Image (cartoon, rainbow, N blue to C red):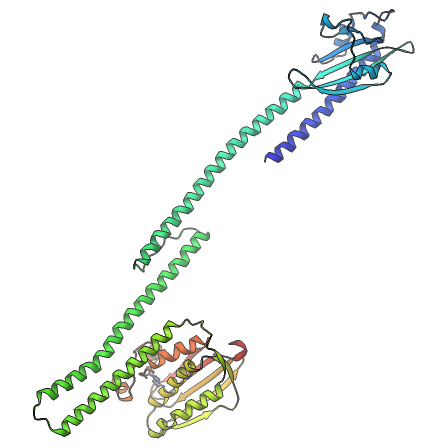
Amino acid sequence: MVVFSYYIINSISGYLYRDERVNVSTTANMISSFAGEYFGEDNQTVDQSIDGLLETLKVDEQARILLINKDSAVLFDSQHNPDIIGKAQVKQSVITALGGKEGYEEYKNSEDGTLVLDASVPINHGGAIIGAVNVTYTSNKINTFVNEITRDIALLFVVIFFLVGLIIFLVVSLITRRIVDFTKKITDMSDGVLDEKLEVKGHDEIAQLGEAFNNMSEKLALLEEKRLQFVSDASHELKTPLSSIKLIADSIMQTPDIDMDYLHEFLNDMVGEVNRLNRIVNKLLYITKMDSVSNADVRNFELLNLKTMVGDIVKNLRPLAEYSNIEMVLDAPEDVFTMADKDRLWQGIYNICDNAIKYTREYGKVEITLSAAGTEAVVSVRDNGVGLTAEDREKIFDRFYRVDKARARATGGTGLGLSIALSAVQMHGGRIEVDSELNMGSEFRIILPLMDNA
Ligand code: ADP
């Protein structure tokens, strides 16, 4: 604004000065064309009635007119100052005019520093130069104008400065108030209040920050809820075998002359429960280990041929299938490559194949097919076993969820196998799809990105 105002004031005053210069010079020329008539023969006097001429010509009263003879002596002063009459004027412009040319100069007034425009024009009479007209004009008007406009602009600056300052202050305090509020809520949250919500107003960056925070706190609260649920489920699952063990031990203690065969049977049951406890604890340890690694941790990923992996899993499970007279068919004609953490992915696919055998009746059939479709690899595990209702299909990936607890006990199920499989597949950027019909069988499809897309 300062630069802009300086430029504007400068160009306006420049324009006004140009106008005044022309005025001064025109006035001097005009007077010079009449002034010769008023000079005395001796070139030492001027008829003072020239005042009337100046009035007729409407010469600006602020302009001072001097008539000077050819010896540079002042013969007439429009301001009628007797002190300078008869005195020599040796100004540059006058010297130039007496030399026959129009003289012009500008200088600062020594008293108040205002600009003086000074023009002198020769007076010709009877073919000779008899003197000169000198016009001086102090451009008070322009000076006053420039001063006034400068003062107005300065005032405007002060007003704008305070207004802008006030607006900035209000906006900043509005923003900081929200940030202070956010900080308090975040501090509360770090103290354990997980369901804190920020009040989000508007759509600016701070509002977006608030929304992101609210999303995060919602997720954290959900996570905490899941964690508590997991701890409670895990304790419950561990309690059941422990109660059985305690019951068996009590029975043994309360029977002093216990038959050796009975004792054997009791101990056998006890070992079964201890094995079960062992299985649950091992799976829980495995889950905690998996949860502690971020999903994006791809450091252990290596190039892996799914054909080899699926073939090995089938080889591993074949004895179990044969034990229940279940036919196991593998269809993996082609190499299919993906990037994977071998142990994790093995565990995921293994759990699903293991389930297909566990939840298929004797003389059933389990078919495992590997194929590549577009950018994805698909491992399909199909059985003609017990199948699932639509309702159960939704829940089977939840930790500790088992459709038929009694059957699960018989098969050694813990309800953790599918949740382990799902996180294993998801950590590889994949997903699991399930088609199933009760008593008809199920198909689990493990879908993984192919090597180039992994
Ligand atoms: P579990 O250790 O009990 O097998 P999972 O998490 O592996 O636990 O499976 C959860 C439940 O899903 C099982 O208890 C079972 O009821 C059901 N389920 C899993 N796979 C199949 C399948 N192929 N056919 C029918 N039900 C299945």
